[in-house]
Each structure stands twice: as structure tokens, then as C-alpha cells.
Image (cartoon, rainbow, N blue to C red; front, top):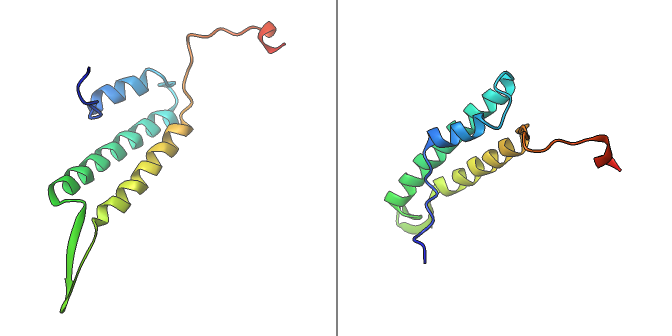
Length: 105
């Protein structure tokens, strides 16, 4: 049996992986990689804060006290949606496959 799955891959490894799969001469694709990495960094900072403070927070308003979900959870969902959107927009180069006209038939 293997240990828990580690999802905290280093930013440099992600950058190297993405840069190897895009056209490095296309400034738009390179910019997408940069935005993607910044979003990962934001997500990880929010995740650390939520882990430290807990997924719920207690709010006191005068004589009322109530518990609600951590406000960053909603923001994390937004950043995650942005990450997925950027992922879908990448124009990855596929060097492994050579197609011919016969493949279209």
C-alpha cells in the first residue's frame, strides 16, 4: 500500500512541465503559464490560512454568535475555477503523434 497522495508539487516542476508542452515562442501561451502559476501560489496561500484557522469561523455580532464557513473557501473555489479555465485554454504541443491523410478516413 502506498502512502497518502502528495499534491504539493513544486511550482518549478509545474512550470517546467507546462513550458515543455507549449510553444515557448508564443507570448500568449507563456503568459498563461505565468498566470496559472500565480493562481496556484494564491490557492496554496489561502489553503495554508484555512488549515491554520480552520474551515469554520465564529462571528460575533453584538449579542449574536454564529459559526460560518471560512470566507477563503469561497475564494479558493473561484481560484480553482480560474485554474481549470486556464488549463482548458492551453494549446499543448503533441510531439508524440504524427498524423497522415489516411488517419482522416
